[in-house]
Amino acid sequence: MAGSPILKFFGKRVREERLKKGLSQEKLAELAGVHRTYIGMIERGEKNITLENINKVAKALEIPVSDLLKGI
Image (cartoon, rainbow, N blue to C red; front, side, top):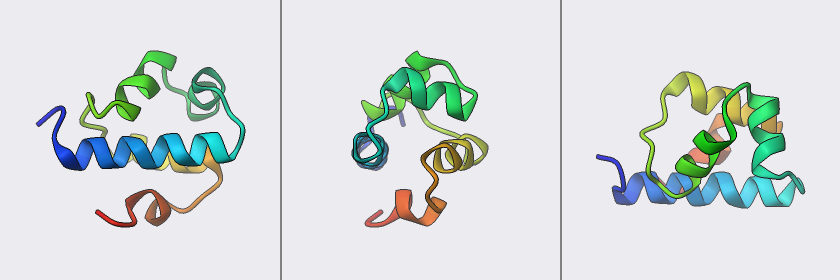
């Protein structure tokens, strides 16, 4: 499933929101309580992210989870 279109789309949404907030991957990872390389893997669609981590990333970005899932 890694590298699937849905994961790539989700990763693109995370990247868009991160850049809108002016955050580096490292800062987003720190705020979400995950490793920086994990954020990179999510953004490239290489990691099948769990619901728990979707929630952590959304909270770190200060947006609702639904914003990250729009268009899926």
